[in-house]
Length: 286
Picture (tube, helix red, strand yellow):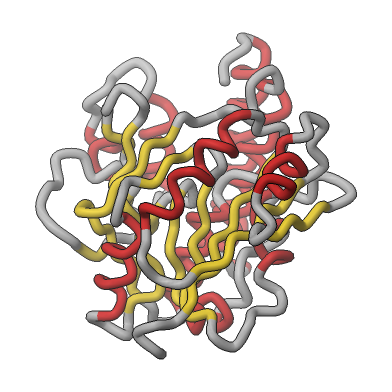
């Protein structure tokens, strides 16, 4: 890997509106390294991706005929990587990269060839931290978090899953948020990118799990930071998003607990997920 290797920056749009313009404006100050930006559009109707491409001739726009999902869109952009690409930065269009943030991620990655993915600290527009580095959910922690997170903020299952109260410098974690994620090219190719069976939600958890199983580390780098507005593409589509979230959760459970011996456990979890999805959809919860 060359210290001067190019970064492929990929963002996926779906009626992202003015968020995309702000994201693209934040890129130049985020890194001093050579980079290429690819905007993958999942069938937007707002015209923002084409406007961005017209404004910047160096930007590549990949327009898909339909909304194929988040991971599938990223895979489409990374399908034919140029030989000089060493890193793939995946970022939502409703994020803004802090100055030097991408360089901080790359520099941390260059220190250890075992690192497959790196993630920054994430806050919302008010500066409130988002738990972007977490433990893999187990049946116990996942169930406890799902049942009690809304009504008991500091319950032990959510605290463990979200790694609440863990502070310090760069550290290895189980999984990193796909809102902004730097992936080493070798690692991405090694695990064949994202599992396209996930339409949205849990594709980042699954990617980290497969990187873990392939021997790659996932490192949280709080010295790098971004701002994430969040949920712009799901606004007004809550019922569909509730369903997608629970379908993806079920798929991840199948991956986490494979084999015939775990079949009864998977069945119980799938039934529970369907019941929870129905209840949340009925009450209009996100």
